[in-house]
Amino acid sequence: MAGRKHKNYHIGYRLLILTVFVLYVASVIFCCLYAFPNANLSLVKKLFGVSYDKVIHFIMFLPYPMLFSALYRAVFMSASNFKILVIALFSGLFFAGLTELAQGLLTSVRTPDFYDYIADCAAIGVSTLCSIFLLLLIPKDHGK
Image 1 (cartoon, rainbow, N blue to C red):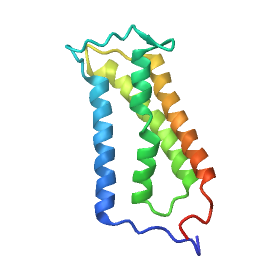
Image 2 (cartoon, one colour):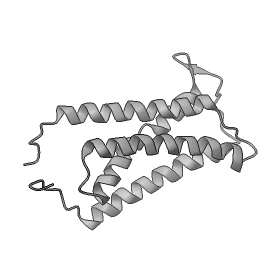
Image 3 (cartoon, rainbow, N blue to C red):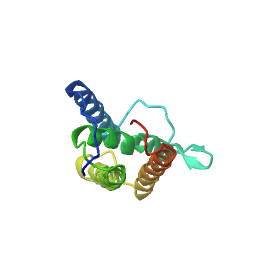
Image 4 (cartoon, one colour):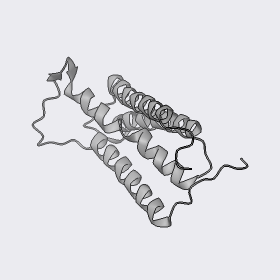
């Protein structure tokens, strides 16, 4: 892409983004696989008609597209915003599916739940749509 300049991110910034993303993914995996025996959170209770469990899943996966996009942009500086968001969307859906499968395969106290996966996918979709909306609001000549 001739004439298009990309930011040359400092190595410290790249390491920071990578660290944040790895910690985020590790914490999601931990939350999906750990039993939390002393938690007094009733997952049967509802918030606006939606069980707390689904709300927690939604909140856990909401940052994924934004964090993935920041990581991808820092590592592969020549990618377009649309390409990054498409990759973030599909990798997020895949990651959400893996976490649900892992609950059934790797633990004896957690079980996979299709509706948890739907909550995960909804969060990833909402976050991706918000990112697209924000990109449309930013002028094309921003940063020149």
